[in-house]
Amino acid sequence: KTSPILEKLSGISLPSVSDNEAREITSILSLTGEDGDNGASTTGRRKRRVLIAFFTQWGDFDSFEMAQRLVPYIPKLEEEGVKLVAIGIGEMEGAKTFARLTGFPESKLYVDSEAKTHSALGFEAGFGRRSTSDATAGKTWWTSDSALKVTEGWSPYAKLLAMCAGLGSPGTLQEVFRGYLGDKNSPEIKDRFPGVLPDQMSGLFGVLGDGYQRPFELATVRLLNMGNILTRWEDLTPKDKNLILQRGGAIILDADGEVLYRHDDKGILGYADVDEIVEVATASSS
Image (cartoon, rainbow, N blue to C red; front, side, top):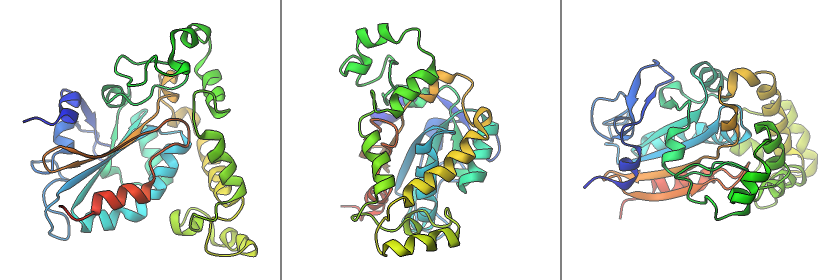
């Protein structure tokens, strides 16, 4: 029996950032076979699950933050027999720049220049866009026929600005405010984004207390990421600028290709909770 997820992705091939060699997606996600990241982990434990991060485009806050959050967990995932695969939207050179800036391993990174995987799995296409397989197509006001008609002449950048303002991007403004105001229920940034903030900068937030996400702490991470993104915008973004609106998600598959977890990004800064997906991916098999 073929997994429904793998059926939807069947026929799609993506190049690896590490060697620019195209591989069929089912081979990339397989826990057995010839792909260099398959089979036993470096600890000798047989891989039992695959965690797939569907990044948005390389020049997106969501992609940067999710990659930066995942990097510290890579040894744990490896130790627990979980294969990590990340697929992002854009071009190969942008992917290499992204890997260098975030520290995400090229060997686990694949390029989807046309967002074929995102479309096939029905991840949200973004404000004023609709893909044929978008699960929310026409079900939300920002994908309705009237919204598409009103925004027909809008550039992708105008639509992106609308999303940054929260239009057709649920939860974005709340997450922006959380970055500035802090969050008593979240750990310090240095625990979640190790190495992203310079040590001296991390120390400055100590005057606001310890053991939680202090005001402006997450906003500072985003400001640093924004500097890296805007100064390399053409390199990081896809040739088809409509794809800067495309949202991503995360999926965890077991050894049979069955879905253990799925998250669909609803808007900008709506990427999956990395602590949660790692917990699910590394949990003991029932």
